[in-house]
Length: 117
Image: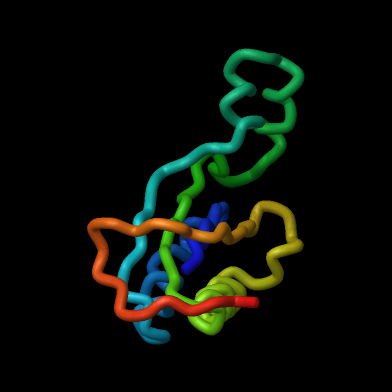
């Protein structure tokens, strides 16, 4: 199992991503509001505020999506959904993601566990 974490700056894509997850069989995710350090620091350090003011749209907030996937194939499907909805993740202010191995799960019904090696 893996924990897939997606920090989504293009929050207008959130619903499409969650719909896409359902379509590929990912039935659970947690979404929280988040904000990048630069935007938070802009309130306190004038140097950062000049960069925050340069942006045309409100980029002060992002959404962070957490989902536990059972195997690599499911992780790769989720990543494909994100890339389809957001576009090129190397573009600034789009999204970034990473996964971590999960060793223990309690409180979730997990049918099977795969190994990504």
